[in-house]
Image 1 (cartoon, chains in turn blue, brown):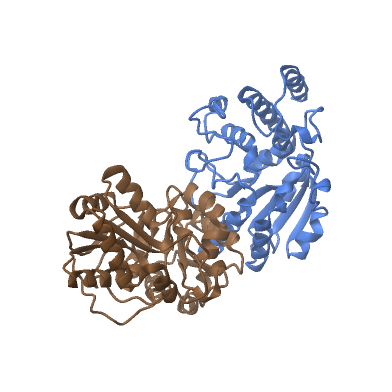
Image 2 (image 1 turned 120 degrees about the vertical axis):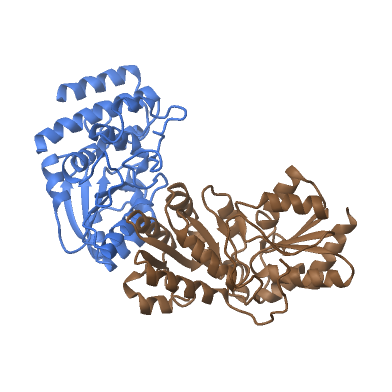
Length: 269
Length: 318
């Protein structure tokens, strides 16, 4: 799929995500809007996956370490054919398999259970290491939030990935500059991320993480070391009044706000 | 049943673990050992020299170690994740919960030097909470073998079991208790000695002490049953209820705090199904003083003679 088509799909995913969060009355919409372009590029261009064989041994691995943005993942999985699209309406409902954080035992396409932060990258390192041991050709991708990089477990994994020479691992940091309670800059500022990752032995690419023309080539980059994409994104991207506002981390839009957001996203489609 | 307690030679169960893992790995390329700079203490030196590519040493980073284990399993490997039990279970408990148990990753967690094996090193290095922490998690069998034979059998079982588990091993020497051809069965206690007046239940380094206590009791005309209960979860309810009904008194002993471990698991079953007098022996809810594991077990009332006294006291409460 070409970038312009990917952008169209991303807007559709944003609209469905917005609707699901609004109807469920809960979700993490700010971080979902920031990461949706990356998810779209992965599922509709980059990942070698087979929805009818979700455990195919040669599938590329994808881990959404920022598991609180599960709704965006569910919408992407549904559009890609892993789960029925109509099932998105069950998000957060009693006994729905689509809870607030993804469950790999219930939702095909989910590789490991995330939710507590700082878990996905170590698991992704294990996935990439497994391929090195077995000779499997799959590639492993993991998306973390930027605030999540405050978890020390990530840096344990970053060291291990370099030590193991995992050139089959790509980490995307969704760098929207906001965590739950405040801006990273006002909390525990990790910026600039590039020199930190480079110092740990990784290749680093910095991109506009909401621009498909930059996301796709970065994801398709292959080198001789583990690769980190610092994806500069906007929290709430695509919805004007949410953009770069910390209070939209997990706020739910009112009816008026919802209608306005739908209008903005629909206009873009 | 009535296995000999005459064996006096003591064995470090880590040797049985390492030898069994190497034997299995020789026939299964998917087996990998994952460790946290613990090649020596996990007895993985032989594994490393025989299968150097399949030893994944993440360095001193337990959270990453457990996560890497989950990822290796996702990629079709069969990881045995080995580390000192206080750090494996304490430092990485959230990874054990989310990445291993909840994700149903086919990872074998191996806690080395559990209990008070690092006695003199102090409470930071004691792992006397690991039963409580791990048995609270769904989908994670918790197993503490009592001798080198059961250790080898449990490692073989774990390799064939499709799912996660936690093997809790010690480095404190224990005599052979089970027959050489013993096969491990998850959730099944082993009747080591028949008895009708009281039942002594233990696992790990305490089972042989229970056998000696039963001998002391026998010399005093008391018939003590001994159950080796390696599996703490799922607990063998049937054997516990039968013991309560048939002997009317229970004593448990464990190299663990009495809060939340084997004794607690047994008590939960007894209270619900067959209430009888009971005594839990273990570390009484304190940070233990300095001393070897053997010294501390004695100190906390788990010398065989002390266990026998505790049993007599419970029998009096019938």
